Length: 67
Image (cartoon, rainbow, N blue to C red):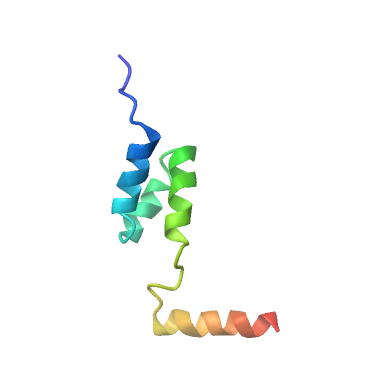
């Protein structure tokens, strides 16, 4: 018995629906290669959305090191 095939567009819409749930998107990265390719742009479209004070200082340190 084979599993039914879910079209790529449906998977993309599901991932779009989950774009604010970062922990679920990180789990979606591990499903298969297509899910990974579809999830990465959603995760890293706005990488500083959940930045805390501790992370803010780390990011500033990294930026200063680029100079």
